[in-house]
Length: 180
Image 1 (cartoon, rainbow, N blue to C red):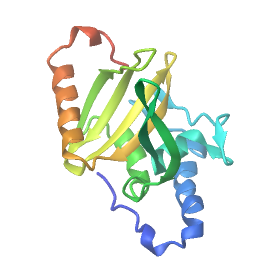
Image 2: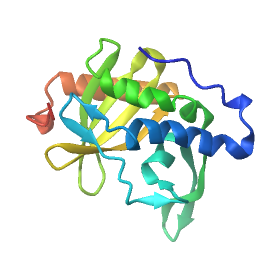
Image 3: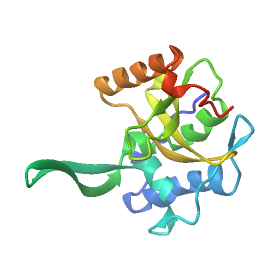
Image 4: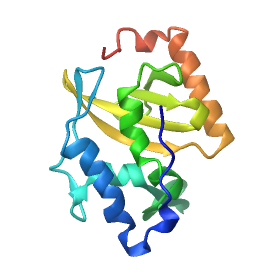
């Protein structure tokens, strides 16, 4: 179901972003992508950073941040986003997971976030490959890619397993949240 990760070590460092963007453009801009043939994955072309869709950066880079004391509390401070090679080399997996969301190798679950709006997001976890795609709903028939990444910490894998089990066990906060 999933292709071999891209061999980014063979790409000139100054060309990596354009190389990766070609896959994003092919999968989400030049061709419309849907999940369950009904929910459009909107690349939100109107939201750009450095001439490329913001969603692209969330599929290929990782925020470097640290905690800093401000007054009597600790806050996260960003040092910027940098290419995450384990994430970026799997950019083709995003569409592959979306179109194969009902495959037995994908754990599909919804999770209520702790963000200000308490959004319910759709998680598609290729658990044998430690890769996850997260979507946010936009209206009735559109969504956007929040992020995707390679799970590189055992505690995060445990966290996603807990979220999956919470969903399949019938968390009342997630009643009737399904998109399809």
